Length: 220
Image 1 (cartoon, rainbow, N blue to C red):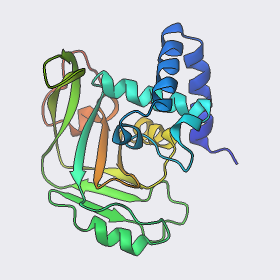
Image 2: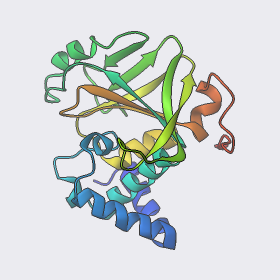
Image 3: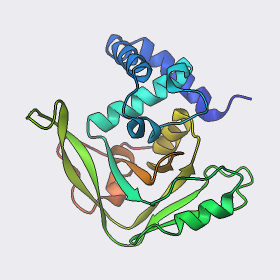
Image 4: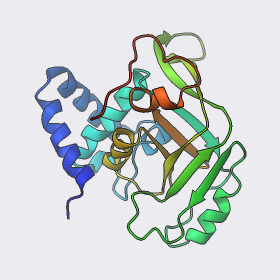
């Protein structure tokens, strides 16, 4: 059965392939996924049993869209140390114990029953925290072949839906579109990746004025 977020990703793919710039981005992303992007850069957005090189086109579209927003500083990111990797989904009690090791101001709560819930749990921070966003200013020096300077994005106390283990890129995009944030604890990762969509959530969670050129998206 096709989910709502998969249907939305298919619609996104249709829109992107009608735009030459996005079509080029899709081709670059597909090639990058075949050549193995840095693993955590991929799993922060999506992770399935299939290798990313074999993702269907709509999942590559969702991945490309989120990755592009990260690269253009429209999504801020914060890595939060857990110190352990997730166990299989069937061991929810074990994963809850591991998530209890997250240090303040962050608290990770795993839904031990879930029962069709929209996420696996919730990541909360009860004091100000700092995420980081790309500025678009390139870095070229002896230690960095290619990259961009990142600037701090200070956060007020808030919360984000938590996804553990396998998650399609379309589900990550769904959370960012509908809730403005998502926290990803992927298989094989000892960190949680917190993603904040600045255009959708920034006005509520930003501890300072939004960066120049970024405005809140009005959702009807």
